[in-house]
Image (tube, rainbow, N blue to C red):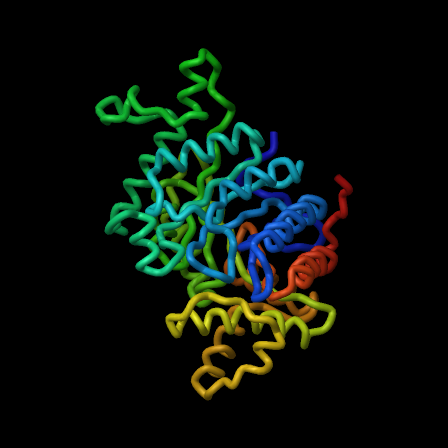
Length: 361
């Protein structure tokens, strides 16, 4: 039986490879076009032997279209056959744990054994939008309890003294099967914790869960966070040994200059966020024409150091070094750029560079 957490390494890749997608919606592009690109990307990842495709939750950002990962994942269950599909992640403080358990229980019923659930504690948006999502304040310190409730809903194993025990059920899920007289499923839906600091690394270690580190936000701390996770890991029913994934945003092209231009669109979008403006993904031509002042140019150049970009050989060399330095068990890459075609080509080039198989559906 295939391990639901540990991926399979192909070709010359130093670790199993996976794909992260935000359905980027560049200026002049519709959400319909961006999401059609996401479907094409998932099909490509399925064909080329990537381990998983994850999409992340963002709100009130004109540059992305993934406000509801479960909706996109439901579509992708019918568009793929080998690929693990998941959220990387669901921002749990935005949602009642029961709702998340029900949504991913439905996904698991649609594609048994192919669904992952990654959880984050950030809002995935600005404070005002977070307040609108949550209908009030949310205490970040409540995240461990939210995770615990979600795990109990998925496992149908609330302690007898808990007020939800034998009263509140996540349907579809393990409780529904039990009440309908079915034997327990062979394994619970894999839950991952996400983070870009030591906080989630320590919580994932304490709960014995797989950990995904967002190096596209904080590449400097990847080695220390993974070391902390491994040193403090406690085996659990879900995972006997630590398993850590590291995610990067990349831009690969046959032309290194074009890769930099595509990566520059993301750097400009991040500059806008630093300036408390909306997250817009401009075209390379708009970036080229923008009159940067000295501080803005420094901010863009600094962010570009977070995005491995260049020829496939240059990008894979960077990924290989990160894997060697951190010991990551899996690498996840998010392809960036204004053009959907450029993002798809970037993933294909990396697959070719590592010699990943090309499996017709």
